[in-house]
Image 1 (cartoon, helix red, strand yellow):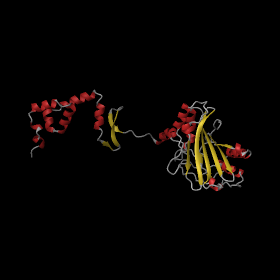
Image 2 (cartoon, one colour):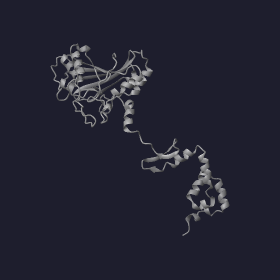
Image 3 (cartoon, helix red, strand yellow):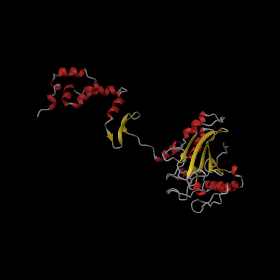
Image 4 (tube, helix red, strand yellow):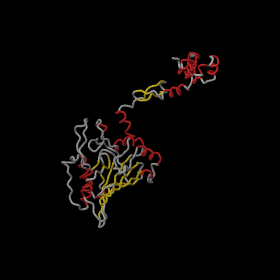
Length: 351
């Protein structure tokens, strides 16, 4: 059976005429033509290959040619990419190990302990927001930082839960304030104490009212239940308005207070409710609980202040303490209400 390429009109031309036509083609076309047809290769030879190799070996277009050639080949781990550093084709470099990713994420992970709405909305604070605020707002400014201001409402069948945020500079320190306002769902009705305690309210990675048990972690054998300090501040505000004693289940859902927490409880119990400001022993966070009641309404307001101090460098050091981490990783990287280290922080004023 005759070779079908011999029946092509192009291959029936005289060799001299065919070589003249090939001389008018671009070098890339001649190479492609000789690679796809043996008859053409026997007439033109492989001299065009050598010319192309010399040309692209000394030309910057070689990288473009290799990128085009790498569009179709696939490797087991994915497509081949042309590496400018290696000057060769190889699969994509694998991502760094997980331990390096965790260290890198310390400043890229947002501060997301505030609750979300049913549609996924809410308030999420990133470290870049803090850095931009420190670089754009003078240290002696008393004005409110507008792009850190927000307000939204959490959907709840029995409570009206509104969260508002603001920020400003106080003696050079950048202070971010969150206000949680709880009101009765029906006008004229009063808040019930059990409904104020049951919602899982979290004001920082270490202070919450959750009664969940610590998650299982292979690296931590001494994880204890949630601490009672934040719950104590809520109960003290309710009792100050005559709502009766509220028993805190220390033995079941919460652990016993530490000596520092016990000292703070005793100090707060001897002061008026207007001066009862609590400090988190594990991050630069302060909070205050107020309960207002009259004939027509009742509401509880939890005001929380987070301090990032006066410089981006200092803010980068305290930022990991504001990021809640519960992954089953090494205990030094875990940061939640069940496991965290007590640290000391410089004092700061609030607004």
